[in-house]
Length: 122
Image (cartoon, rainbow, N blue to C red; front, side, top):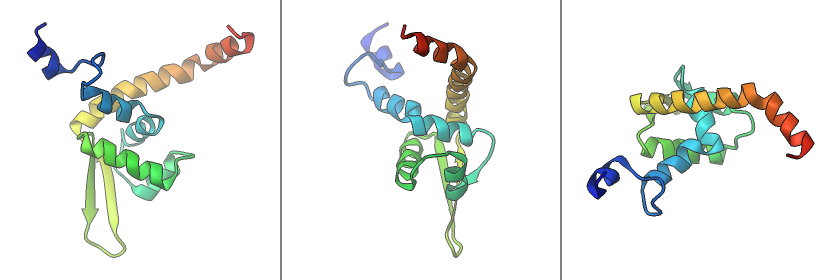
């Protein structure tokens, strides 16, 4: 693969590749959980925060901004009082959510084996 084709695709192993920033956003703990939470429905900020246990308001807002900036999350602000903002996944976000959901599912189903491994200190 030539250099131009490689850069069009992205090369995570290259230190300066912009795909690393997207990887950081998508695979962060909160990024994964936001993508999974929005996979099936549109949610308001407060609904999303309740659905994702343990996330602070600040971290959720920052994660949503990152994912929106990457084109994975769509933010729709409604001109009403009080303000009403909906978050949903874009088609690209749905693709990402499917992939991270598969990894999350593997983690959840493999948890007994992982926990057993941790106990024996291997």
